[in-house]
Image (cartoon, rainbow, N blue to C red; front, side, top):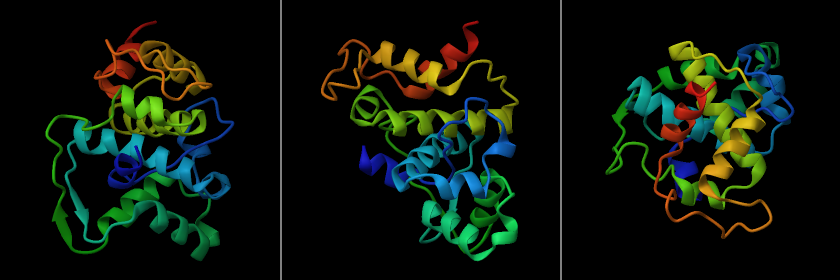
Length: 186
């Protein structure tokens, strides 16, 4: 899980935000999140950004979670700027390199990743993925983030009290694919 998070860094998380509003996901929000939550938010956003939006190039030596945090700490007057804009701003800086693709679409973003994540990390992963979907594809988010997290946990057969538990029949299903199905289900 940690390797997936580290390789997918780029966006933000929001504890206590049930609506998926980009205006809520700003520097003030970002700085209130723990590092693991920022990383999970970024992982969810970046999975969408790379695989769904199709953006494969990154600045060399790119450390987005640290870069976003540093940006907000250096520029207090920019803390109202949405995290997605800061990702784009930071992403535009520096020499480019082609991101190596995983062997399969969405890489390790599956039930095993979900099983090993804490509830807070799951919430931020979903928040990040949905922030990207909303920004780039105008997807309508009609339920609280926590509802999607609970539905994904039911799909994968995971339990917050037993991090080893997973449904072997659904463990290989990719989180973005299942999440997209849940978004379409009204």
